[in-house]
Length: 419
Ligand code: AMP
Ligand code: GLY
Image (cartoon, rainbow, N blue to C red; front, side):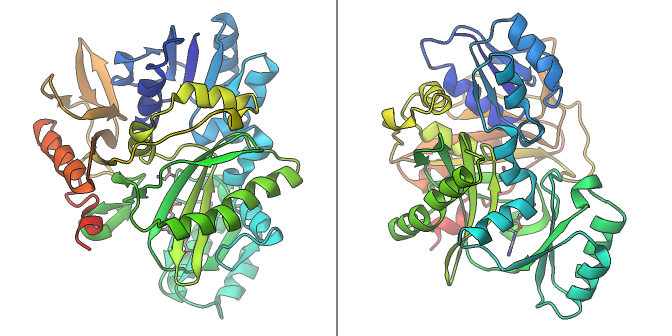
């Protein structure tokens, strides 16, 4: 089989390394991929949002299966276009991807179908939003409706912060058209858990739980980033919470999407908060999380491509999806200055015999050498019998990888082993 994977980050590298293990796989193409991915796949210079070129490439190269990994092409309808051209795909179509593409849609869906989430109001007029904020409980959370590169969520601790966020999003259009509508919601507290799931719209199989570390600095300080590291499983996700999530959140969401005639097929990501009143949905993503994928897939024992093909064919119930009982830790190595301004073009050096997996996110290859090209450069993932060992293994390897301005959090998973 020839497979094509759309995307260029650490998540795509983790997916590619996993599907490479399937003996049926012949060629793997990455569109566009990156310097690290080029060691495991053929990189083709077609951007993740260039759907027309993706379709032409898939048809010309007789691709047997396409995996659309990032949010942008999914929300833009890449799966619809590829399927129209006869290419089988893993990923939701445009009608289903709206669960991530519009926060107003997601909140209204949860309200309509009684799925636990923060209380909220939606606005498409800034004056009404600003009026509402005069008496809204503080802190409050302001979310741009559409995709905003993971930056469209503002936690406002004062009324002034809340009002400026509304003005920036709705009037100045800081996130472009994503800010035409907003959600203002109740501020929730509690540990966060990410649960990715496979679903074909009939069966839903949650994967091992994980925990992201979104802030740039240790002790969850500093700016929000795309994710500085992950661990799996998440110790806050107990058996009881898992059962409650299945009954009150996962199955109701799949059923709700079916009732709305928006059957979701692919990876549905539940961003949860375990509040004093039980688990609630903070966000849905219509795709694998990044960097959650870099710890979840290394623990997957069943063949990933077989699961993806069964999902696309509506036959997920035929597959017995198994995860190992081990623990995993991914430490992201970033460029100093990320998520703001950072330098690029620095050579990355590492020994050949590393004992952990390296998933490359922001690097290019020139003359056989890797050079930094992004904010998040790579993730080091280790798997071990205990979380403590996995963390130690990853940090041992991190110390052996070098590039100018390398920067990483020192406390990935720390709060999970100290309590
Ligand atoms: P982002 O990755 O930019 O979408 O950030 C979402 C983050 O904002 C979540 O991981 C939470 O930490 C936080 N967040 C979102 N909604 C709420 C909420 N209602 N209450 C508290 N924190 C929230
Ligand atoms: N790690 C969060 C996300 O992928 O959106």
